[in-house]
Length: 311
Image 1 (tube, rainbow, N blue to C red):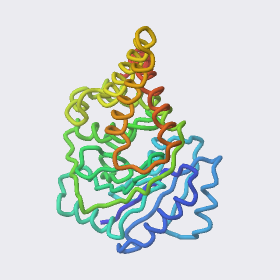
Image 2: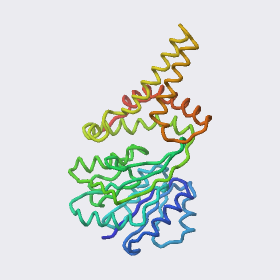
Image 3: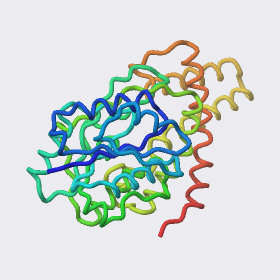
Image 4: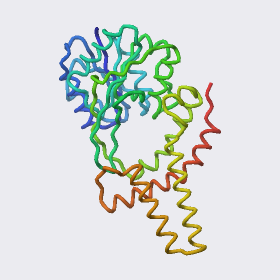
């Protein structure tokens, strides 16, 4: 069984090289798989592909920076029956393709396979995806039969980024397709440094959750629970802290503010910082930016709820 690997490149040249090297070094017959990289024409991805000079790699450029559109271009140009997706900041294990193909051969009736994604992030301002037990469907480790991609028309390009991969899985499930989680299909997601701006920008991702819920309310509730439950919880706590500080201004400023800040730090540590390494400066910046994000969350949520329409 032959397989294609699709990578939406996001102008991370050094990381992309590591991903491609891991794919070129798979313990899978070279003639049985192809690698398709799709990049944005304004980026420098083409130079990376030229430097590697591998006949196994096909490169396409499009006039869009969004991963959903890149993945659609990738799978539509695939010349195999199975299309595997990963990202340009991930490292597939050496037996990734072997285990994927084995899983499809052992389960001929399935539509797709969700693999295990690992990470070892211990730092505060770093990001890494993790999926150890399934039901998250991240596109950094996901494979689908091409006939199913054609049947459901691939990725919904109205998402652009975030939840477009979950949407793909929900479309398959809605069409009675089976998705298998296989823990032997492993991709490592190295921690990638982010800035405080990335934390604030998380509120923009709310639109992906809102769109997904409006399209698949039952599936969303089944797999992900209450809509934006984590964000609502953190927002509620931050607004409570703001109320306590305001109340302290009226009664006892020093005691009230001190108590509110202590409660905030304890809550934030339990939710986001436990087990992470950070400096005092990072600690303060992280808490400040997350509080601002959480206070803004309800306004962004209701804006997206009102403005996002699905057919």
